[in-house]
Length: 294
Image (cartoon, rainbow, N blue to C red; front, side, top):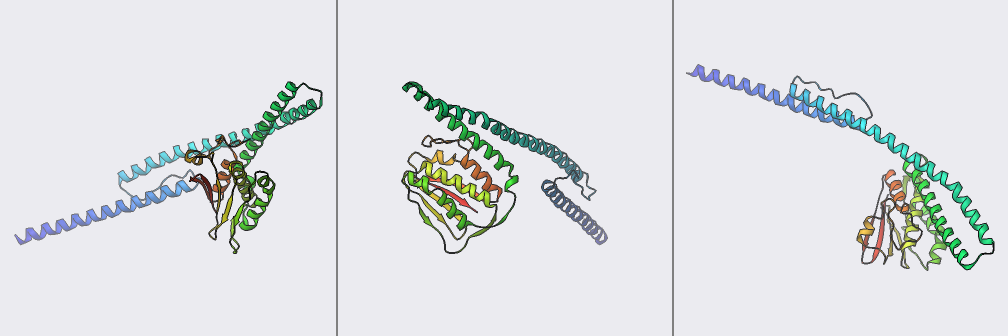
C-alpha cells in the first residue's frame, strides 16, 4: 500500500513538474511574442515574428500576428504614399492659383482707375473683396501643405520662448491697436527654453495671436508660466463650447471671424504636435482660452 502511495505521489510530482515547465514555456513564448510584436511595430522592417518554442499553438499565434503585421504595413505604405501625393497636389494647386489671382487683382486695380458708374464700382469692390479672400485662402493652403510635410521644420535648437513670444506680440501691435486691444502680458523672470524649431514656433504664435485678434471682443491676456505653458485668453462673445472644440479642425470658421480660412489654428496644431507639444482651446464664461504646452 505504501508503495502504491509513493508511486502515486511520485507520478503526481512528475506531472506537476511537467505542467509547470509547460506553463513556464508558454509564458516565455507569450512574452517573446509581445516583445517581438512591439519591435516590429516600432521599426520599418519585413522581418517576421520568430519565437523559440515547440508549442504549435503559440507558433500558430505568432504566424497569424505576423500575417496581420504585413497587411498593416502594406496599408501604412499606401497611406503614406497617398498622403504625400495629396500634400504635393495641394501645394502645387495653391501655387498655380497664385499667378491668375495676381493677374486678376492687377486688372481690377486698373479697372477701378477707369471712369465707372456707382453700380459698376460697387461690383468691382465686391469682386476685389472676394478675390482677396480667395488669395488669402490660397496662401493658407500653401502654408498648410508646407506645415504638414514639415521638412522645413525638422531642425531643432534651444529656443528662448520668452523672446519669441515678445517678438510675436510686438508684430501684432498694429493689428491690436486697430481693434482697440491692449494686451496684458505676464512673463516669468526666468528664461524658458525648449528644444524646438524657431520658425515653427513663430508660426504657431502668429496663427494663435491672429485668431485672438480676430475673435476678441476687446481684451487679450497672454501668460507664459515657468513650466513652459502659454495661455491666450480673451472675451469672445461670438463663440460657444462647440465652436471652441472645433477651432483646430481644418476649414472650420466661426461666423464672427472676417476673412477666415479655417486653416490658421489647424496649422498651429500640426506644428505643435510635430514638436511634441499640445494645444487646446477652452471656452468658459464668455471667454476663450487657447492653451499651448511645450
